[in-house]
Image (cartoon, one colour):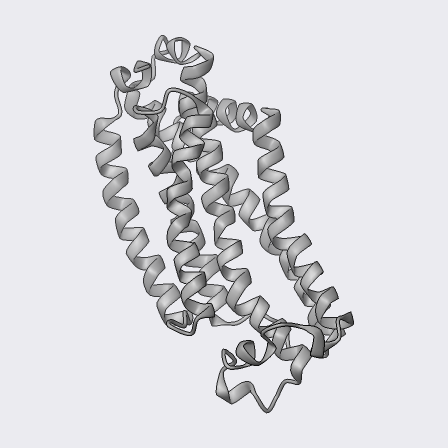
Length: 267
């Protein structure tokens, strides 16, 4: 049984290619992940390797965040890199599926209304439900691809740091739960979030401004980890992913029912 019919696949391919070839969208889909998974980890590795430890502010406070069982296994430089990879980078990485999904969905749904091409789509034999299915699938697929490439690139950068610092490879249960469960769930959530906003947003830029609200929980978690109030391990990452999957299923059902030609043409 095909997930998408041939007409739906045609819309899928159209949206996938159309979104990617919008220069501003492509710049965002390339630039933000490159900053999150290449520039920031590489810059931090450079600081860990070459900056004098006595000139780095807050080192003692950072060491308090290390798991007690690892304090005797890592020296100062290794501990600082470990904290970066396991406390900061997961939150940065999770921004990639959220950013890529909301950006692509905004270009697909809101951008199509803004460009005046939605009317043409409604003249095709496809129902509103089929259009919804194909467009959501295209946005999610593009985001999955960006996230996968980003993780592979991140693994190369951080893996090089692990070799230089003589540390075990960074991949652990928390990262596996993040990449395999929470990240895909966040991708679907980002797309659905933009679908729900599409009826209220008048332009692509307006919808992207509103999408910034979904990043706030990540910022709060990051602050909580640095202050020592919370520690997100594999269990909590997996639990968050499972809860988000259930929320995705509910929102997908509700948004599919509300998705109609009136919503598509609403200015």
